[in-house]
Length: 467
Image 1 (cartoon, one colour):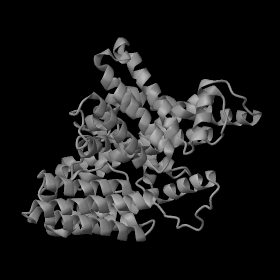
Image 2: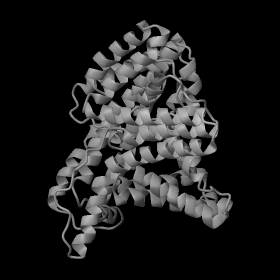
Image 3: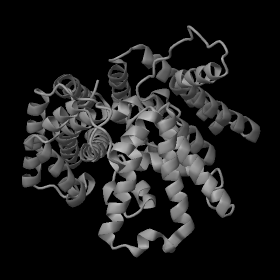
Image 4: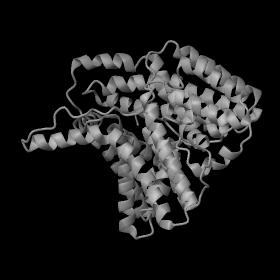
């Protein structure tokens, strides 16, 4: 089930909200957990069993960490939690990838390949809820939060449907207090509606049309230089509005339920360096990687060389977290390399010699090129696409049909609107701080328009559902 669907907007959400507010305070977490499991199991009920197993393991480990006085027992419980989560993630996300790579090596060595090996289906959102669940045991071990005694409260934290399948990654230390006590106010609920409306508009009115353009270009193979850049730009807009739109809807739904989640995007395409880009893009993931991986590896405390290695390793693993493909590793490597280069150069970075506008343009172009590896799963195909972007290639006359799609007034208008919103409009988080009747009228109007347009669209994917 996705947020941008009629079954969610017209049926699931109203029933879930009404039920939640009718339930007594002590039963709210049980009700929310129940609806979250229904939401998650809608596509495949078996996925619910996997999430429940992960929840039960981490709850038990958290109780052991909190209740034991022996350091050895506490460390063992933390190890069990981390290993079990990473094992689940590794098996379901990377088993097929590993077998494919083993078969490639076997084929190269002219040895028999593994035939009839189990094909594993990737559960929705497993990358998000395993990271979120791991943060609980780590925070309890570090003393950044107290273990939850009630299993239903913990199950509610792990499974909460607003951010379950595509984030933001809500760390336990950020929400522990809200699980114990939170307020439900008209102001929160109203702001939640505004967040949800703007997120829906981003998704339906901008991300979906941009995605249609991107799919048209990337699916064509060899295209002209202008079309290649157009497609890369369309994908950059699609992934931003798709994911930030989902995050806005998730934050809005959280506010409707009394929870305040942290900001997940902060105008990332306005960044003046790759370092700044990662302070603005998918903030919940970048901060998770920083606090739970980069800093434990030593961060920047063990000399320059170790710092560069840590940056490259963290970004490489961050790329692999997004998907089982070497292109994701390359994407992470590009960002890790740029982060290392910027840190090494410091204020002598080539960015500093450019006016602000050109620093933003240079950063966006680097991000745009890296998105090619993120969008295309196979390395040879990504190289061909980059050749289309940077050199004149022989294009088949049938590709003229692509231009007939891309340069329609509707798609050109959407691309222009996307650019204006990206570089000129305020963030949803800031814009909704002070709501007026005019702003709420605009939000409701955008929601109505989004739902009307949604009824006519056949293209409505959520990119981050596959991660």
